Image (cartoon, rainbow, N blue to C red; front, top):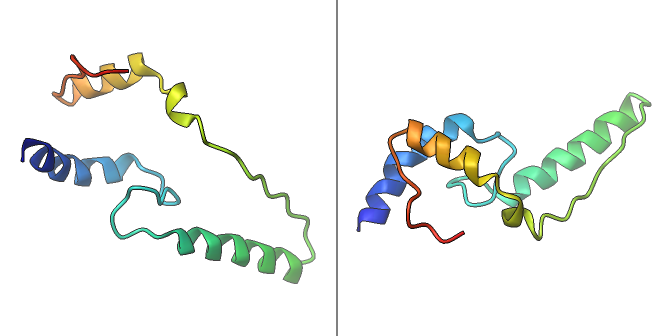
Length: 87
């Protein structure tokens, strides 16, 4: 119950900091939005006769790369603590 209350409180605050193209784990955002964005980018570059480079990245280990010091400092400034969190 506490986790759900905390998640609801943080959700509106976090949306300020989350990129609009971030779709994973964000309520009311869907993977089809990014697929359409890629399709539209390809279409527009073809229509305007421009070059386009698309990068596909594998974020399999992205959570192993979390800057825990930055995350801890940010959460502390927001009034939250990461003490006791398993990293």
